[in-house]
Length: 528
Image 1: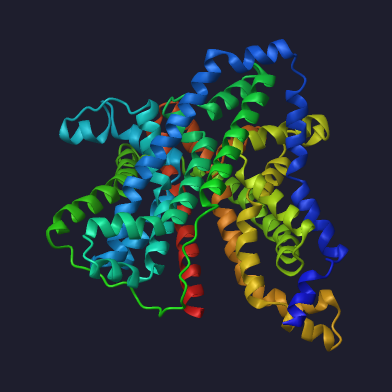
Image 2: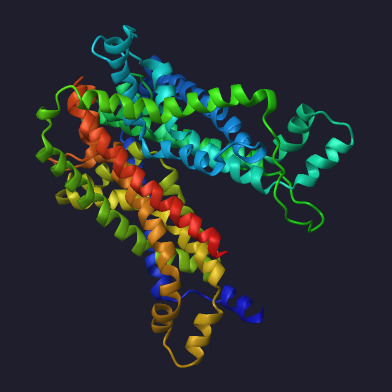
């Protein structure tokens, strides 16, 4: 115990402190340039920009979209989590995986599927004579985003319900409480942390999304930022909109912290771990089956069927060479992003796990701040920084890869930090006591045991970088056409057939890495 305390209070070596601080401080540099660019506006002009009716409309639309996406995601995720954890659902493990797979279908691909479903040439009209109007606006954006992000909340709720002590419900039932009362007064309060963390992730993703919202023709902060900057209309207005969007995202973080400040859900005794008893569905069997079928049809069936329909329209016209080129460009961008994130995660995770203190706290918090900042403001800040400080990097592949690695660095740190906390410093200290230098002890003892966690974080970074659209659209060099950009550009031009193979490959690509992440987490649980 004394060794652990000593290692936790020791000062971090410069070999770790410098790269960890650089990784964290790099997040602040472009944001400072964003503030500098925004501060060049005169007060009268700033007042006009901020108080114009269009700005108020963007704020209202953004908040309305967040509320609607969070509400619809909750209506989908909560019943699904209850079904797989509380009731005897056949093939519950398989359904848990199926309810997670929508994460492999990016929001802009879901928007493409919903748009491709309607219209005169859509499959509904061709096969059933149902000509639906084109989905757009708040309704279309809500559907496209909620059907993509609800697994975030489902995974949180499923974990919370699975770990909930069944004795709490049994005690309430022995006191004569009805199932509805037990759900309201016993289960729901214990789900508060899961709800808040899931809602926070969904809200942050919604305010930062651009692809699905632009395809659905709904005006929010993100679409206005991209249009103002890409069209070179009012760059200062784009900077201030970015700051407002960052403030909105920050307010979500503060609200989540405020709501969690008084949560006390731990029990006084150690208790005995046992599985939660599952009940038969009974009269709810048919409604539950219909609900599950509806969710799977909307989140998985619609994208797959629409893509297959448009692929079958003229299969000989598919330009497989262009598709292969887009896939190769996606790999060439996402691969280095993952490697850089894995390398940068090592010093930050080490200093956070082994040398907790102010430097470790600041470095880690700044990294997570970079991830919490919506993608478009982050990309815009990097664009301003490159134009002012390193103009030769503007619209270069190096700038794009660096921006993606910084933005998603937090995803690589989480698994590495958790694994280091599990390992502890004792084995490495023993190696140093036997004569190994610090770097040699780390590379020979700790790194091999840390490698699987680093790969898990790298796979996650690779997957999200390959799907990323706003940053790629804003910073990519001329001639870059990733899979995400190809789906978006063809869909927004109405070329649904041309977009189909890119969308299908994107789903296959993302599904492969979702499977790798799920299989890795499964192996991790088995080892524990």
